[in-house]
Image (cartoon, rainbow over all chains, first blue to last red; front, side):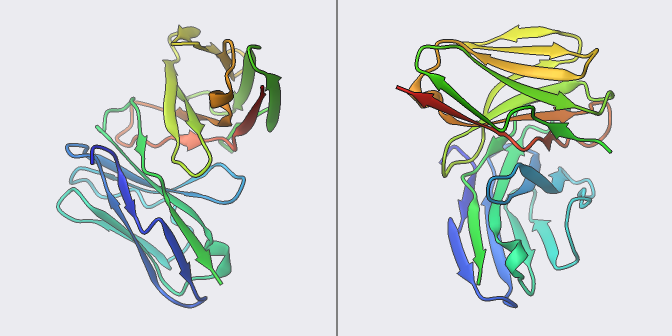
Length: 114
Length: 114
């Protein structure tokens, strides 16, 4: 499709398991972002990729969180040894990478850790 | 620290009325601001943006006002419709750096009563 695609849309896992969330950005967008949204809260920045530059990982809450972006396109957010506090909606966005401009968001992956 | 916040977490209006959603920001270096709308179960969608060299910008039924003196941003929606019911987020960014990373507020829930 033409928009940002995320999968899975819903993921239920047990505490301690690892999960992978996938983001397929809009074709041609050089910038890709991951945000986390807890219930009733705003968007918490996690990580930002821009072209071939080193990613901005300043928002990752712990070393259990990592992300990669292969070939400048698809990105995977990995959460190891999930905890209940990791339960949230994980939103991916992409943009043309200009200093100002619109971010296009996917519909998110809802993670529930039991 | 740097933050983007909102004066009112919820707003309820009658259909046809005008709505005003407010946002305060604390980073005086921020020079680009965006309003996003998030409907239930969906990712945020861009509404309108404004740069700090402007104090007003109009779109279709929406107007964003920026008061840099008091670091205040507002979104005005004219003739509010039931389809406008959503959570509205303001976001800020400081351009000029190598990274483009929006900082989001917690959001205001707008409910439009028919």
